[in-house]
Image (tube, rainbow, N blue to C red):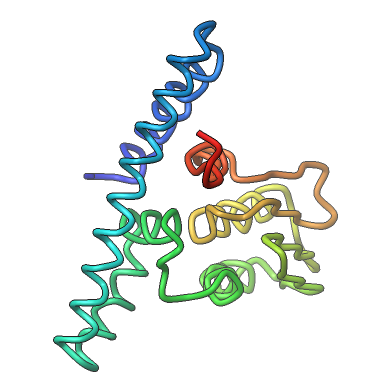
Length: 179
């Protein structure tokens, strides 16, 4: 994919198609389509997991570095998160996103405080010269790095955001035995 915009457009299209499937009047067709998507995801997930195993086993420390590098690529990172294969856990990824925005916040006499990360949720408070643009920038950085977040709350902000712009993982992955 050439850009984040293109990725977001494709994700939005997937979300639209899933919505159309969910609203289908034919329950057999709906179940068949969901089973097809789940089976493809299972196959892709197993393939990605095997690729990471081979890279790790055959390339040693260099392979571990490569896998870490893959975890920082926007598209690859999203796939690794989707298949629960990302080399970094949720908290590490969320903290990395917050570190990326700290210089911008400092340049505007603002800082992050009260950071709480856990159970798929990130909460932070901007103090100092915080405004809605800064809050939006922090929220955007978090959602890019932790698209699997259930909730992102920037305290003091009048708005809350979940993982908007991303296909919710629950809509793509079904529980075993539940097509």
